Image (cartoon, rainbow, N blue to C red; front, side):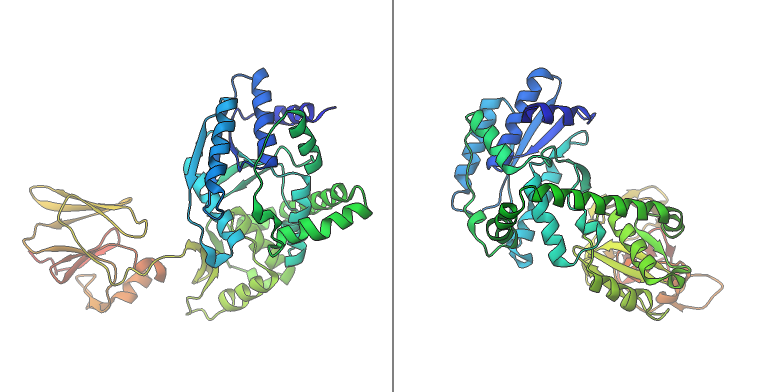
Length: 429
């Protein structure tokens, strides 16, 4: 059976009809684009788009854009071109990968599946890189034909094909492709494996890539089995996706603790922590003193503990020094907090934020929105003034959220934390 027939059989297993094809212009993605174009000839209802990411890392990047545009014009496939800035502080490979997927995420439609040209040789490289990092079953599972990444569904229909097969197909179809000169730089780990190490292993063992693929699949199946056996226990700890309850957690064996934590992080599509990072998470966060509010940074996320629960959050900005003037009916808030709305009625001012609202009397004083406050406030008419920290604790608001709740000030007097409390007997008109 020829390569296209196998590709066609694989796609028929997938009910999707809308694909966004990641197109670099290299051999692999060019072959993928051509296969989709040929498949669409018999399936005209299929909707295809391609996306090319211009990373700005090569002097030839502009010519790659022209090549991809010409190819897509020839195949009558719409092309999206996105220019990105790569954060080099994380390493060029990691920074480019993150910038690429974040850019794709902004363009992909809800009904589309992102399709990449990863093939069997890529799978071997991914397995070896995971082995080098000391990853467990999750990492050694490498890539799967169907998965999710950065909240996107991803299809990899070429995983069973070798690069040699794709090259033969490209020649048979008279395709042309670009060459990324960075693939020749063996300072990059993947290139070192690809160019120096794996060719010798393939020369020694002719079916080496296929056996690595089988090992990766064994790891994937074993990880799936572990997840299945732990599912009931996991649901006891994780009823909300970004929260992990710690009741009885420390009574488990260390392997069970680490497996449950990895299940939680995998569910939230976080990068898998190393063994050392897991140990630090357990020691520095989970077993910290009860009154502590520790946190652990993992990639772009932060794991925080409050009382007996772990919370997975973004890496929030410090808003404690920010002060905004509420002059219009809508005020954009910083750090993805949305907007604060003001409705003026004949009797009151109504402030609305997210699902919360508060009604306050009219005032001639300037209205300011702040995010930080320390000191005592009168929260209840029958109680004396109390430290605002105690009020937050009574309301069970975690410390990192307290400086993210809009505080309404009339002049310099605090009036309300929208949705949580207002100051008793302190309404200044």
